[in-house]
Every structure is written in C-alpha cells, then in structure tokens.
Length: 106
Image (cartoon, rainbow, N blue to C red; front, side, top):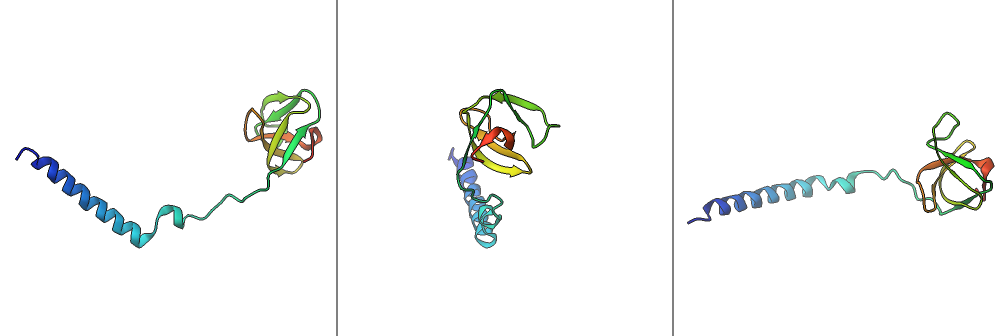
C-alpha cells in the first residue's frame, strides 16, 4: 500500500503524543509549576506638570534620555525607585522613567 510510510509516521506521532501526555501528567505543566513573579498593582495615572520634561531609560540622570513630554501628558504608573516613577506613556513609549518633581498625582 502506498500510504505505509504515512501510517508509520502517524503511528510514531501517536506514540510521541502519548509519551508527552504521560510526562505532563506525572510532572505537571510548566505553567502550573512556575511561580508568579508579577504582582498585581492597582491602576494609577500620573500627569506631567511641565513642558519639555525628559523621560529616561532608567531611574537616574545617568540613563539615556528617550524623549520629551509636555504638560498634561498622562502616564500609567508601573513602579517607583527613590524619587523616580516608571510608567507607560499614553499613546507612546512604555517602561519609561520620570522624576517625581515633574509629575502630579503620583
């Protein structure tokens, strides 16, 4: 029969799938066993209070400037470090840092 090779390949696939299923059943899935590193943070919006405010790649003057925002621009708070706030700019870059001096409501 012409499909002998296909039948053997499918039979091998069935054995492999069964073996993987047995391993998953005995060890648990990777998602179930991995600890969760991300903590839920309540949503909070910060507002830029000046014009020409620089946002940076990290929490300090030694980090490169990624861009500039102006008064009224909003940012979703991600976290803080010292006097620096990390957030996602509305309609812009994510994970940027701005000094608290240039933000209201943070």
